[in-house]
Amino acid sequence: MGREIGREVQKVSRERQEQNLQEVIVTKKLILLIFISLLLTSVSANVEESKEWQGNGVKVEHLTINNDTILKATSVGRGFSTLVSPLIPINTTLKYSFSIKAENASGILAEIAYFNENKTFLFAKNLTFIGKSSFEWKEVEMVALPSKEARFSALVIVINSTGTVYLDNLTITEAKPIEKPKAETSTSQTKTETPESTKATIPQETKEETPTNETENIQRLLIDDEDIKVEILLNKTYHPGDTIRADFYITNKKGVVNEIDIRLEVYYFGVKVFSYEHPSWREYSEGKTIHIFHESKLPMITPPGKYTLKFYITPAGRETKEISTSITVKPNAKWFLFVITVITLFFGTVLLLKKYWKLITKTYKEFSIGQKFVFFAVIGLIIAAVILAFGAENYANDVAIVVYYLLLVGVLNEWVEYLEPRWDREDVREAISVYLLALLMYLSRDTLTVYPAVAVLIIGTAVGILKIKQIRRLFKKEKGVKKRNIEEVKIIGETEDGFIILRTDGEEDEREE
Image (cartoon, rainbow, N blue to C red; front, side):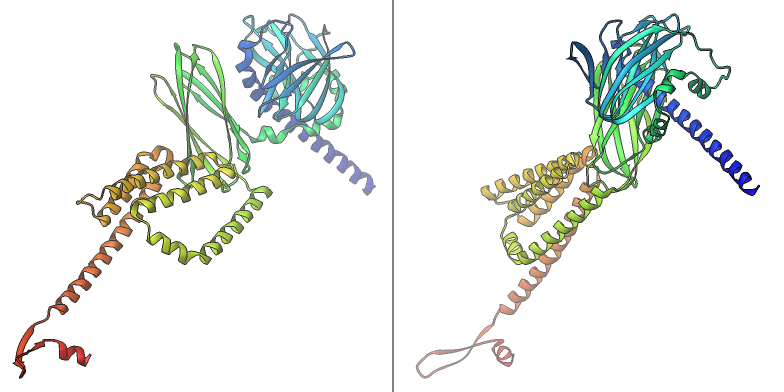
């Protein structure tokens, strides 16, 4: 009796777990459906009623094998790429049947998209996960229900990140209408509108392969006011070395805008560590949605932690719109290996410098002021090359800017040293050169931030104070030596031969010493 009760309890528990899992899968499918709908909005203007497939982020080819034409689509971008079939007029229930095969795909999905009479995308339904990685031919059927707003429908194949898809035998036929569910919630509609034929075609275990990580990791930012609407999509978490992609869906609500400036500032523990600005020159007509995106590779040297991102959207002639969010950079095995390599190289360099430190310092002391600045410029070039090799192109560019300023100040000093003007004083010129370098770096604060300029100013001031103290000490020492060297000569007598005997004050003191 007890065993039977235990079995019943386990059965009820499994049923509840399966039910909860199905609800989670449906919810995340809905989120992914919204994201892909936004992606389709950007390509709706290019989709026409024709016999050709339209791709966004994919390369479309037609292969002929045994007198059979097969469609091949390869993803060439990041994130979600879409492949849209020719538009079909819809006034009744349609059944889309097709064969599909994939190679090295992160994830393949399919959905039905709806368009109005102007071929503008409206919405999408029946998001279905087909498979991932590589799989052989699968037969899939999807049903498109008629809608009051829609005049056309199309099959949409979605490729997540990378992969190649092969399509064949696409047929579109009228099907028996499926009754709409009575429930009003969007979650239940998405669940009940999936045709039974599609569920039967795709194995039950593939439901567990739904790319939930991708949907959970996506964050959506929204700016929506009376004159413009901007939706920004990007991930929440990254690893060092990953490519960060931000998708912008911009809808102008009033008039025509020919330029929109997009600026990004990144802060780490309140300190600005990166900035980016790009003007988008194109026609943003009223009511039209434009999709643009920016990709940047996260350097391997990026320290883990939480970063604050501030986006500034400025349409020409209008006020700047601001929105902020945060991303998290998590360390991975490559990052730890990189850190170990950097530490090893650092200690190796320190040991090498320690071995030749006396020679380096001796050579450095013999440099003129101009040569010292050029020396630091050469070191900066080496550092910039190393940073660039590690993939941090933006930081390498910042170091290159500082190198340029060092060379500029160094060459100016070389000219003064060559001309040897009478007014030249090395100690004064050295202090002026350091302050000039700090001023140049401060003028580039939008790129370099203000902190390097402040650091150079502090270092220059500290070195100047030490120089002044050193000069004072030398002056006092030289003054004391001069006083001591002022000797008083007295005539104290004369020899028999007529020679005068002289006596210098201090001789007795020196003998005593």
